[in-house]
Length: 236
Image (tube, rainbow, N blue to C red; front, side, top):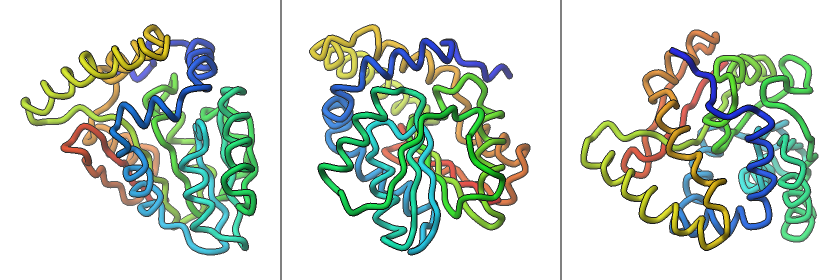
């Protein structure tokens, strides 16, 4: 199976830079506010503890990063990493405005070449990033490498439901709600990538297989939102 994305890394980077100013409003509208609940679930499954060092990869506007930082507390530290400069700037500004006391470092970097030493982090999260990397196995290898032994990564993303009815609903949702909403924000082209990227994205079962092939010792994929979303949880 070819896990290469249909977009180049530069194209994806450009897309997220253009989306950056309205990313939060768009996510909220498209998920009816539920994306925050799904992110909380991902954070919980990564099992952060007070004092931990955490990492949020492809952090976007920093929602997950802040949630993770709240869990590790003042004695811990979280890094929010993204390759889209404008997204990272917005994440930093939001964090200073909303949660100035949280211990967060914002780092510009590549999910396929994480700028950290081996065995650095106690917990790792990734929200809506795995589907967009150009090499999924390579990304999983990097997540595995920077995790400490016994620690977990939780990866939240879109998922194709196995039930035909829900698959049809998801198609309707993407075509009838996502596209018009994106049009209202002037981002039709930018959000047109979701459906093709989803078609190429490994199913939950395939994600579990890839994680085991990477070397993770225990892996499970949790379907959520009636199977339209999923969280892959893998332990090193």
